[in-house]
Image (cartoon, rainbow, N blue to C red; front, side, top):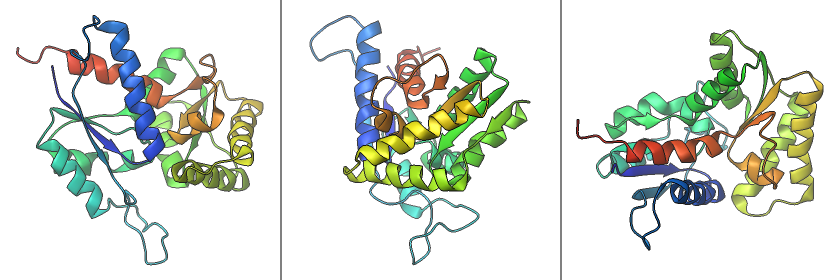
Length: 234
């Protein structure tokens, strides 16, 4: 069984991912006390994944923070492959793989593949900050799909809500901002919505409606288990 290196960004979202991996494992593995589960080596990054200016705003074009690459290198020495239950930092996926010397099982690629399998022609995209949203929309458009995002006012409210989840102080207004963002994309004619930030499902609370939403971390968890269980001896 392969050892999984988990590069965590958002505290609550990383713990949520670990729980999902546990549940996904129990669906495919025989019960045998605490044995048989994939081994997870988790690094919770306590800094911003992208380089910041002195005022705390991102440096553009985005580049990985040194701490992100140091964490990737540390994990790479201890695991067989990496996962990162955070959408936005996938803009640095190539640099992460180079630093780790390991492959990254990309939740972004998994989400885009899910959209294609569903036959959507127009996908709504939610995420944290515009560059992260653009990362998804660019990949969708490269596959010949239309991509729809929300306006700056609603994006600002969603960004604030996401940060509050990370800080453990989200309230009803933050949860409402997430629901409003999803509903706005539905009204704009999207076939479905990519929940492109791992804090968004936490804000929505109940299990997202899988008929017209793609939850990347929900796809990543069982994919992680499947990849960890693959025979790598051949």
